Image (tube, rainbow, N blue to C red; front, side, top):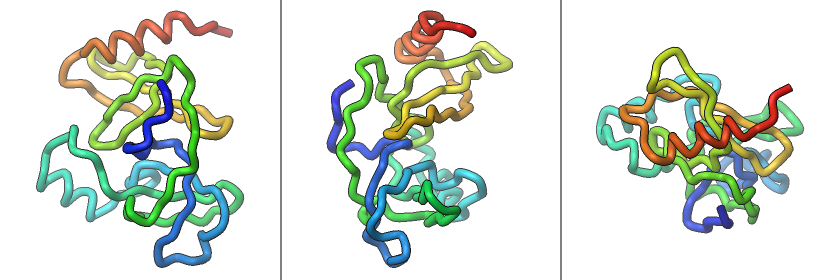
Length: 151
């Protein structure tokens, strides 16, 4: 997957230009807005749209060198730091957030999976989800899991 400039992928590094100026001037990690807690504004978004394919406009921005975060940061307040994702990354939308997915691992049902995704750093992220149907993208990520070495 080449760099995709129009989407902000979870796991990207960004710079921040919003109202919390203590977060200026360093690379920050983008996570789903609800990471680590509930977000009332995102709960309202879920009820209003119900459309998982619509892109989210708010994120959790985390400083990797401290414990500082900005909750419900507007996408307009962040600037992605250019990054080229690995060739096997699959652009994958989960609940309105885009991921550079690497592979899946099984969940407790035929439609449940943990999606492992790349980040712009050295960490591999993961998120659990339940798919309404197993799509060709999900099958591709399942196959990529089978091709990974096990230890």
